[in-house]
Image (cartoon, rainbow, N blue to C red; front, side, top):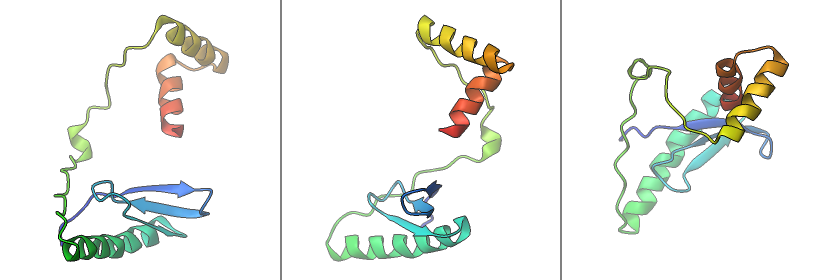
Length: 109
């Protein structure tokens, strides 16, 4: 079986971890732990592929996922001046750098 990357996140609605295979539309699984969700997703991937093949549909090739060491941790984002000012004020109010504040906001999603 091909290896499809998973995105795993907590779902308040499902009260569990959801593991999605973004390369396979609609393919996901839910379980109480991240590990269980990943295992359940493997079964869902196999079922998705079998159903697609039975229906004569093409099965997408898994996308390449680069290892973490290939990412520098830096990227440039252009934002409107008003947003830059608002973020800077919020960072100052919390006593952290703009960089730390934005990284925290991004981490919380």
